[in-house]
Each structure stands twice: as C-alpha cells, then as structure tokens.
Length: 429
Image 1 (cartoon, rainbow, N blue to C red):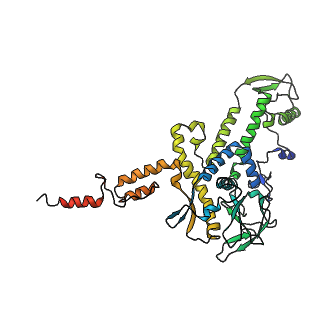
Image 2 (cartoon, rainbow, N blue to C red; image 1 turned 60 degrees about the horizontal axis):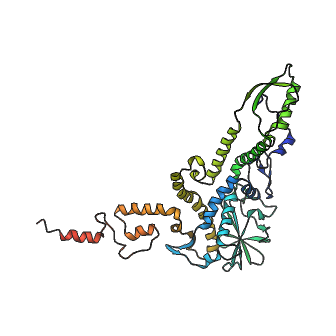
Image 3 (cartoon, rainbow, N blue to C red; image 1 turned 120 degrees about the vertical axis):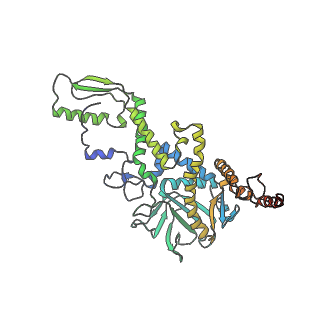
C-alpha cells in the first residue's frame, strides 16, 4: 500500500508477538517465550492448547484418535490369536470406557509424543486398573536434565498426585513406582527430544503454520467487524516530505495498520497526502493461499490423505481410495507405536508373558475389507496356494479340504488332477 520500508521494531515490541512464534524455556509450564536464537519446542500444555484452538490440528488428531479407539484389540502369542484374556479385560476396568481411554492415549501420543499410564495394584502382581495422565501433569525433578530417565517423576493430576522413584530391574529395564509399591507409573516416550528425556511434539515444526491460521481467523473477524478499505497509493500533497515526516508516517502505520488486529481501520496519517492510485485487488487472496498451504502441511505431518480433507482433491473416487491409506499411514502406525510400549511395560513386566503381544483385529476394519478381498482374488489366480491359505488372508475360518492346492484348470485339487492325468497315460498307445 505504501512504498516505505518497515521501521525496525523496538525491543519492547517483541512481547507483542504471539506466544506461538517462539522457543520455550526449560520449565514445563506450557508457555512459550521468545528467543530467536534457540530451537523451538512446543511443550505439553501448549500442545493441548493448540489442539483446543486450531481447528485443523484438532481435526487431524481426531481423525486418527477416534479410529484407533475403534480398533478391536486382541493378543497374539506365537501364531495364535487370543480374543479373550485378563489383559484385554484390564482395558475396560476403570472410570472410563476402553474407547475413551484409547482416545486419550492416542491424543496424548499425537500431540506430545508422550503417554503416561498409572497401574493400580501391587507392582509384583497383575494390575487392577489403568489411569491415563496427561503429560502436562507430569514432571521430573527440578534439578534434572538429560536424555536418561530422571531418578524421580511426580504426577500432579487430580487422578494421581504422588511421587514415583526410578528402579532398575535385573534385565536392565527401568520402572517407576511409589514408596508403598502399590502404584506404578509407565512413561511412554515415542519420539524423544535431543538432550532431554521428554517427547518431541510434532507441533514444534508447525509453529508458523499454527500462528498463520490463528492470526488469519482474527484478521478475518476484524474485517467483518470493521469493513475493508481498498489498497491505495499516496504521494505528498503539494509540499515535500522530509525524513522526520517519513519517520512519523512509519510510526503511524506501525501503530495503526500493521498486524491482524488492525485490519479494516481507515488510513489516517500525520502529514498531508493525496491519492494518486487505487486498486481493489484483494491482498487477502494471498493469505487464503497461505492458509491453504499451512493446512496442507499440518494434515501431511499427521499423515492424513488430502482427498479426505481438501476440497480440490475430494472427489468421490479419490475419497474412497484414500480411506485405506488413512489406516495404513496414520492409524495403524500410531497404534503400533503405543502397543509395543504397552507390551513391554505391562504384558512383559506385570504379566511376565514374554511371547505375547498386544495387537488388533485387521479383519474387523470395514475400510480394509476391499483390499483384503482384492488380495485374495490375486492369490487365487496364482494357482499355487490352498483355499485355506487364501481364506486366512481375508480372516475367514478354515474349511474341510481347504488344504489342497488348486490349479487353474477348473479349480480342482492338484491331487485329483494328477490322478486323472495318470488314467489317460495309456490311451495314446
């Protein structure tokens, strides 16, 4: 709008920046301080705050956590599938349902790369109940910093408010339990930060994108409230403007017209100027493209297929084809990261079942059924697999006679085809 350079901001103006455009201090209070020369991290409290304020982040997390919570859990021991077990019952005993528990666990993992579980009951027995503690209610001892787990962790939640001490088992594993040995804290850190035992939130690389979206929402609200003026070009009105006048104009523009909170204000300047040109090209279109790019980055970071969320790619065929990829790229990998730690910390340590692991029933997912059927069809055409091997790929039970290999000619058992071939051996003579 005006051909003047931006005046260098005064030091005290830095405090006006959004708290999202910054690096964090060492304390776990969730607030982000502005340090341009440091790497930027989003701590747990701030991550949950962004999740509650920015619709794109909320939508991406919900799309994954809701589906993870719907997975049908089961156990696997060697090649045997176990659908009923005390471990599975443990997930339904508590103040919340299994679905709510796994939504909470998954949301925590996606936002902070941390999950904290409290196991109730004697630490040398099978746990009686599981509680999920949000990461911003968990802290290490104040004097500790480093990549190894701290000697002491404290929970500060209404669900659990106590101190847990670190113990090293004979096999080298680390466990945390209270002095009475009646509660165990299980820290799950999926992606650890450098030089810290805490998790690296994936939102740390999205600070700029989140700021753009938040600021844009406020900008558009101000435009609706105050209206919008066209872009104009101004020149001196009959007299020269000296350096002091230019500085005065700069200060007026900075004070009244920079930033989303000043959108829509009428242009009032301290010296006489006249309009020499006007354009009604809406510069907000650049912002719309920027937000569109920011939203795309957020969804891609959470591995959400774009045809499920972006209008330009959301055709019916693209949408249908994208659903299986949501499971393969986002939902299932997220579950597996959590399930591996669950297996290690609970099934191995508390139940002492070294050959068992927590998994899910892939055949109970309707979105993956078509891919399973297509794979069965391709397996059938090979002519080298048994009926039961093909049925297993689709989650179906074995059938009598299903262990014979079928050949392509009429799909009859290979043994039968061989016998028929032998019966014709002497006919040519």
